[in-house]
Length: 258
Image 1 (cartoon, rainbow, N blue to C red):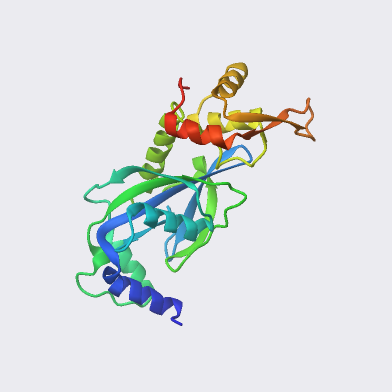
Image 2 (tube, rainbow, N blue to C red):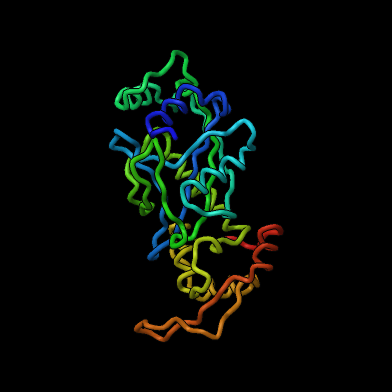
């Protein structure tokens, strides 16, 4: 079995035998916890900055299969809501010197005209996962993988701040014609919890009565006979998504925006 350094050397200097050149994937993985929208980030080895989880496309994979693999490796989850949302192709988005610096710090020789020193175009995917179910995992190129509050991500590497903002804008547009929440909330939730999720994504306050009327009008929620216990106020009813209606709404769309 190869040790980590040997694995890194093989990936850096022979990866072009297995991966597509010039194409990478950056994944914006969203979770929702304690009324906060979270994003999963990785700490780059020998670097003070953080980055989005990413990867490359194997020659026998589709782009979607590669994105699903990256998501699974970072969270341990399968069958997650995953959507391609943008292609990032700025000529100067790559940082060859930083990559070479990282390899030198690891004591790894990089062969001339190495595939990873070439220009890369990145395809952005965003995923919606249940915060409680995800198990963040790092790999050879990262020291740690952690959740961050969306407003506290700080300055990330390359154009990763721009990628997050683009993913968030896409999600906001999606709310105008598709439901959201199934992958972000626990199985049972209250109407105020669902409203808080929408408000967090949209970045604005929504009228409580209008929100409830609109959500119930979509027919994608089933109200349970259970109530949320333990609060200071009257315990609100619990809801769950009607998966058949939810999937239908994803395909056919919803009427009206936010």
